[in-house]
Image 1 (cartoon, rainbow, N blue to C red):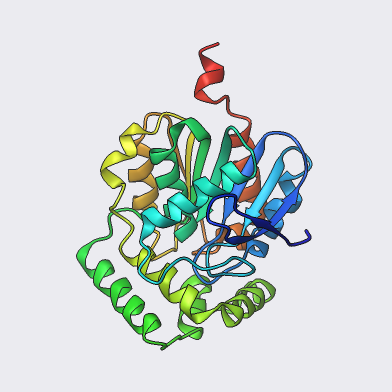
Image 2: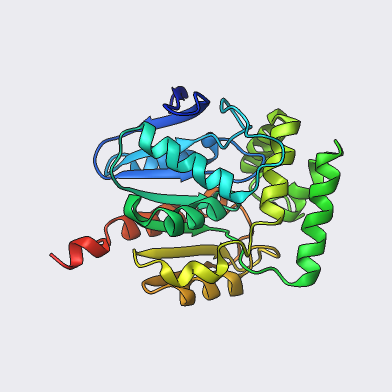
Length: 270
């Protein structure tokens, strides 16, 4: 799972990338504060069937940042540039949390490049209370107040389970560039309804996964997203919170494998 770098053909920006396996390409995008290594279980579990390409989000890991004021559409455009720079005609794309917002926007704005889309612990049309809380966190982070302990409690709970996974996530949070983190978090805070009214345009196989204990990427959000699209399915993982790809790695990997083996729209019409 070696990290290499890709130089984008138009902007010249550098992207950190983990590229493993062969076959149908699957692009993975992590959440705010993480790195491409956060997809470790899925890279290991899926690269024997597919070409798995995990990306460092802008301003994270080895990827150059976007400008400070960049919103979700700029992250979506970045992903399209990555796909084009890799010379890929179509990709299946899966994202976690902020990565899920990017993946959903990509499927809407670039349907010709999107074979399938999966959103893991995605957010969708937050209620006013949740929106106020996440926007307040974004302001604090952009002001340099980075609290790394509260997210860990929110993502893993307080019972001490998943100690190794929590340690890895804590380390990635400690390594993130503060400016890149702030830009991405601000885009995340305001991104849950930018493309929400266009989810009905998604025609490719769509999967939404979350944990039943996730207080922010709630089960109802995943169900609502899946119900909004033409070919959607929601999976709620019992007993898990926000980092389901790490804490329920076998379940998430199996669901992604089944989704990757679902015929894409163009295949069904042949």
